Length: 180
Ligand SMILES: CC(C)(COP(=O)(O)OP(=O)(O)OC[C@H]1O[C@@H](n2cnc3c(N)ncnc32)[C@H](O)[C@@H]1OP(=O)(O)O)[C@@H](O)C(=O)NCCC(=O)NCCS
Image 1 (cartoon, rainbow, N blue to C red):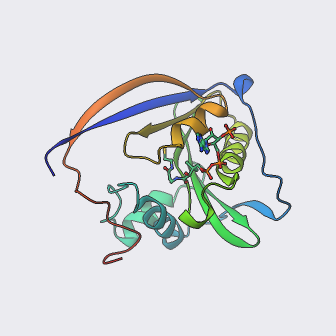
Image 2 (image 1 turned 90 degrees about the vertical axis):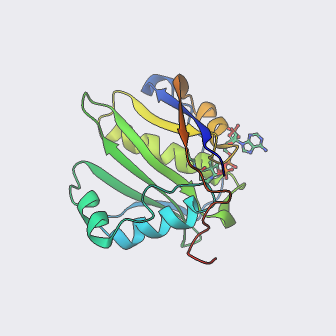
């Protein structure tokens, strides 16, 4: 594929603008992965992001993942389960200056479109505020799920800037695993 203009939108949420929305299901749980489990982060990254051109970390080795997650006071991983089944995840990162960034957030395909995306984002923002966030940051781009930005804006996030990066993007996303 020829070089592609990736439009990255940076969004921010001030805690006072937060509009939480929970699932009505009684069987959802949001649980912290209490110690680094690099295989788990790698699984969600590839299984969710494989449909949406999350490519940067695909070549990461186990050691690279472990190093990334090693400082539990900087990076937190939380899993959303539905009916006891892991459905999605979020990676939260303390940033300098008191902000917390949602580095990755997503649901496995089988759980999209049931109200769990709003619930996952609500739980993620609540956790970020509990971590002391003065602001919650994230970014999305024109390669992400078409509803991703609406999900963020519905919870009170506002776009603060956009940037365009021209990148080599494959014609098709890689899928959840090699050869899938
Ligand atoms: C983004 C994602 C979490 C949303 O999950 P979801 O299950 O579709 O979300 P929900 O059904 O809970 O809906 C949440 C919000 O999405 C938006 N949305 C959902 N369905 C929509 C539709 N048919 N039309 C317009 N907006 C819609 C709305 O803003 C909705 O919030 P609201 O009901 O308060 O208005 C999910 O699609 C996902 O994980 N995608 C793959 C990974 C990804 O793209 N992650 C984001 C990277 S930045």
